[in-house]
Length: 455
Image 1 (cartoon, rainbow, N blue to C red):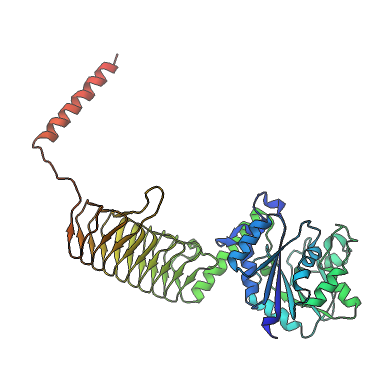
Image 2 (image 1 turned 180 degrees about the horizontal axis):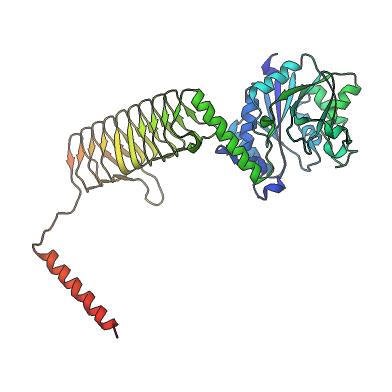
């Protein structure tokens, strides 16, 4: 099947009352990304020609998040939440004439695998409508799939099911696919004569069968269908996401010395033979190349770490941090919006923000790029093979040339030419014997105060 003919509909209109939150349910973070992004990423594997997100509660925020994932995504608003069929119908004006398949996913069901969606599309060669189902360990209040051999006869919501139908363990995930025009035609015929008074997308199966069309079921593992409706379920989903991410990293050749303590984001990439120590947190937008090492207790976000680099322990890389090959960033170092060229060493207790550091430069302990004047950010440029002495304050905008040095304890407010030594500190004054006299004076004052306070 030509994957370019697939259209994706993602339902994301629900408020999520049980989340007890002002934030739309699909925007709650999972793996440092909105839940919605997980569904979009799964659907993206089908290379859809069109993607429509159906928003409702917090539609503006949902639309912003959807377009942050892919600016070409189209968003429609379901002003009243009257059921899943009603939600799909909102996409009809955009996709009714779309060629090929329509696949319906849910913004609060983050774990559907791309391989599962591929199997659903493959089944479309035998069935007009394909539904994703799962064998539930505890079927509870899930909708039941009523089958006859390989044919799906109908889907029955728990509220409307008979006692016999409730014994069925094959349950409905809600995910469905069909030819786009057929899907919208079936949705248009859905009524709301049911216990909830809603327009159920599940009714399209019975409507298709009434037209003499075939319906089938693709079965997946129950874990893929995990939905999120409460904070407890969100926590369970986070645990499941991290479990999968850790397993994938290990299988891809990454060393995790304490896997259960490492936390990944949805878009984290760690290359083969990289080493990740305990208690490392990956925020969004992190790439770690093969052979790099991230040591214990580091927090990384929006950064790129090249082959052979080492980071940490106790380091923080913020958005815009770019580490070239064989860079060393040590303990209690923070890097933000800064490029460190090959072989740079930043051992400890340093902040580099809005900076470029040339290759093989050494940055001493306690160095700070003073990049913010209260209104604007300013850049610091440090050339190759420079030596920045400990406790140097680089007051940006400022440039330190190649092979230049700054003396320890300096405040650098002017550009330093290449190969020059810059000293920017007050002259030391030494007064012999003054330390002893001062201490005696302080002790005497303390004793007098204590005597005065004692009755």
